[in-house]
Image (cartoon, rainbow, N blue to C red; front, side):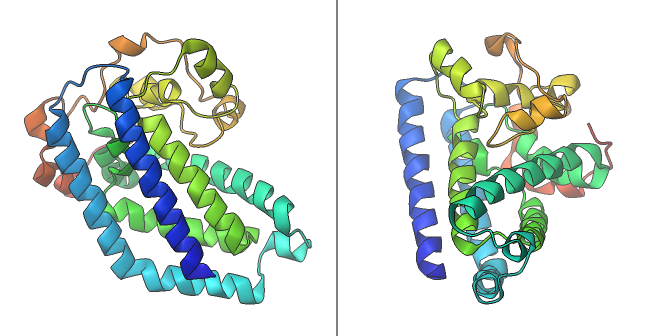
Length: 265
């Protein structure tokens, strides 16, 4: 069951990525600042190398972890006897909330920000930005998520469903997709939209420190980190310390976590 669910998750993720890539080409929100194909190459290499290395480093551990979950049914929800759809709904909400807190921590603690600034160094946003993370951040976040899953008691199907929803919404919110305003407003009342998340990638620190949510927009509203209303087309994306194309070459991006000390944003 576990390998099959993992394959299904991968197929859905790839399909979503390709569809959004095509949709961006047909209904783009804005013209890119950087070379599109240069960014595709850099982000694509980051995504590909991360996928390969994470499979090598954590693949067996994650599959074993899922099997332990199936056998022992550990965690709060199992102890409360909550299975099926109640387990799925509560797991998606809790894991999304935990991810909000974890994302916020990356912006608060200097050592974590070193890793996370790789993601924020992109001068444009499109679906390829959704996978632009340094391997160190991916490893740390994977360990954190496994711990939360074990404590909460999410079953395997709930975890895979969360990963699918989380992955697709992560792709959508980073996309350069133009969504009609009435539809965008309606979607944003519940979910994170590209217009909402684009503000989080602004070079303005007060805007970067906002809109941390991934699936549900209510986390930012609840914890007062929600911002909206900026002129979307006037937003300058990226980091003020890396404003030029030559600052975000592949080698420099990969060296960011090990560069000069920097404070959290």
